Image (tube, helix red, strand yellow):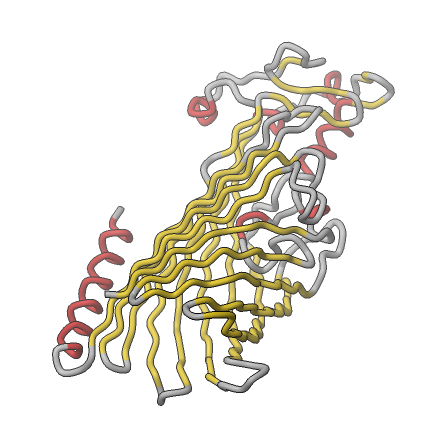
Length: 341
C-alpha cells in the first residue's frame, strides 16, 4: 500500500511539473479505449490449444503532451478462459497491468521514451491435480484426498495448490519518423522484465515413506508428486531481457480512411530461467487494420498475428506450466477508440 501511494505521489508530481511546462507550450491530452479478443471457434485466426476458450484484453490509456515532454498512463486487464479435460480443469487466468511512460521529443521526427510496467495475476487455486493417471487433491474424483491443518494453508480454503505471479518491466525506446512511401516510422527498444512466482501446496509436506512408495495405476506417489511440482513455475526470480524493433506504415484509402500495419520483432534473452523445453529466442507480431479519422476522433479495427504466442508481449502468461504453448502462433482482433482534446 505504501509503495502504491508513493507511486501516485510521483506521478502527480510529474504531472504537475509537466503541466507547468505546458503553460508555456502547446498542450494536448488524449484518451484511448482498446479491446482485443479471441474465441476458440474463430477459424480465420491461428488454431488455439484444446483448452483455450476465449481471451479478452481491455485497456484504458490517458496521454498528455506539454511541448516536447509527454506522459502516458495505462491500465489493462487480461482474461483468459482455459478449460481442460483433466485436473485441474479450470486454469483460467486474470491479470492486471499498469504502464507508465515518459517521453521527450528530440525534434519533429525523433522521440525517446522511458517506461515501467507491472503485470500481476490474480491468485490461481486448483482443488486437484492429475498426473500419470493419478489425481491428487480434494475434489470428488481424487484418487488420494490431501488436506492439511497447517495454518499457512488456511487462506487456500481447501485447495490443493495456490499460485501467484508478478512481473515488473523497465525499458527504453527510441523512435524516428521516416515519412517515406513505404515506411512511416521505425523504433528500437530495450527492456528487462523480472518474473516472480510463488505457490503453496500441502503435498510438499508429505514425508511418510509408506505414502511416497504407494503404487497407484503403476506409478509411485512420490514420483507423481515430484513430476507435479516440477511443472509449477519456478520460485526463484528470473529475468527476460529483450530487444524490440518496430516498423510502421500507413496508406490513405479515402477521405478520413487509412490502412495501417506494423511489424514488431522481439529478440529475447532468458536469465536464470530453468527451462524444461528450450523456449524460442525471438517472436514477431504483425498488426494491421483500418483507421477512421474525424476531427479529434480516431477509430481503429485491427488484428494481431503472433509467431510464438504472446512471448515477449504479455509477460505474465509465460512460465514452466505454459511454456509448451509458446512455439505456436496466436492471433486476436480488436477495436481502438482515441479522443484528442
